[in-house]
Image (cartoon, rainbow, N blue to C red; front, side):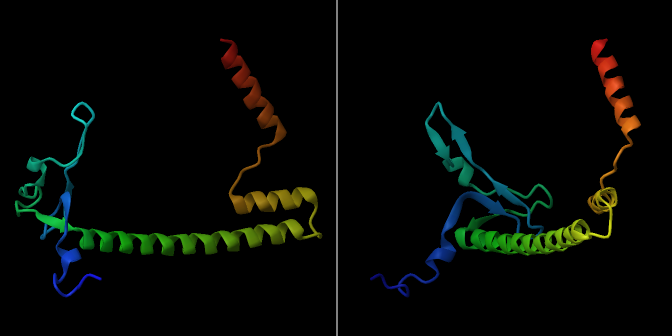
Length: 142
């Protein structure tokens, strides 16, 4: 079993090849090469050199795997929170639509109108639909 104390913070010191970040503004640069002619995917030696930030001229620093994984974890948490928010909103919305659909005191037409209002869908009168179809057929015939 390897001794983790022998090499402290080994994972923190492992750099992602070709990934750089500006310590001032947070700009991130990824240099990756994909060249099927040379059978090369990844980074070349010249892609591993730091360069100045295009925003403020500060030298970019290498991004470690740990830093990038922390960014990914934070982003994933944000997305799960957004998903939960949307899921709650959709459940509430569907509950309202089902309540209208199950309301037996309304006529079928009234139910459809209420559901369309909730869905923000406009129902066109039959005459309008016929006019649209006629116009499209005339344009197609030209």
